[in-house]
Image (cartoon, rainbow, N blue to C red; front, side, top):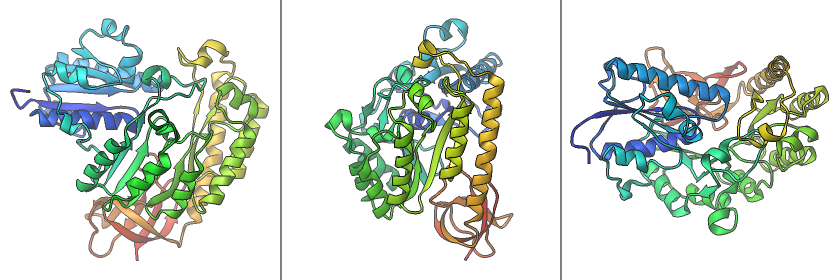
Length: 439
């Protein structure tokens, strides 16, 4: 166990799955007697002894951001701002042989699979009773629940299977225990995540059990909203749609990265679903869950995407009018199937032009969708209060934190409590955010 009250900070980079890993680590450190320094404090004035960076190594921009964060931390160590520096996560997992030689000032490098080696080097005895407990870094009323690790898919562009390994589900009883503990601490919204949430349970139980898990999570009394992210489109489980349509706790919201709509590109991407299947899936989802908000991700510039295929993608987006859509340009990642077997044939300038055109189209679609909500009354969860301005910000069930827009609400009476729910009339909109007033 730690002998002193040293102060530690964990810097979280990349996705919400990294955040969950960091929160498990922070709980073990707190139990061992470490003081936890929140990320928003200025490092120079926070009295941090130990800095841990949980890196992202997915795509070029994320890798560069992680490396820059490590180099800045090295400078902080040289200047005496911190005493020790440790690096974990996807970047150090992916480049575990190169990084220690290139940045020797780091005191320890750790992978993405387990926090145990880092705890051992910090002389922390892991507490098994805290395995399903977390030190929340989100606002206390919502939390992410990571239901599995790794991925068995072999998409051409994705390095995750090589970094995180095969799909491994967390046993159902551990997830329910973790979710119950989060609910006891005040969490009201659970956001279910994984590399592929639809695969949950297949490795442990011989069948997909995402629907069963969502039903059991709905039985936790204190949980009021359950949101589902990162769902793979191929062989999407039908029972999940039935639960989403019937359960009052399930947000009518689904994050499902489709990536493209043209057969040649989907085949080159190795997505296990064709253009017809993609269209049928979107239509079935909207039919099964009326009023659902769909968030998707698209990729431009993948090998095999010519002008015809890009025009197909634009037509697809125009036709299906996704409420939320993000996009990025293909970048060749070493170690992936695409890097080894496909030529990165689309010029970077063309990729950027296509990305800009797609996002301009989506901005108009998003604006139209948000404007259609003006005058409606929607239930909003309060994320933050600004009494000096007479406003608070929140989200409806159709907005996920961190990636979607917010609702800024004028409050002329008593300010609601953070984490509470209130009915709001939508009064204004742009392509990202909404404004409203309490009834």
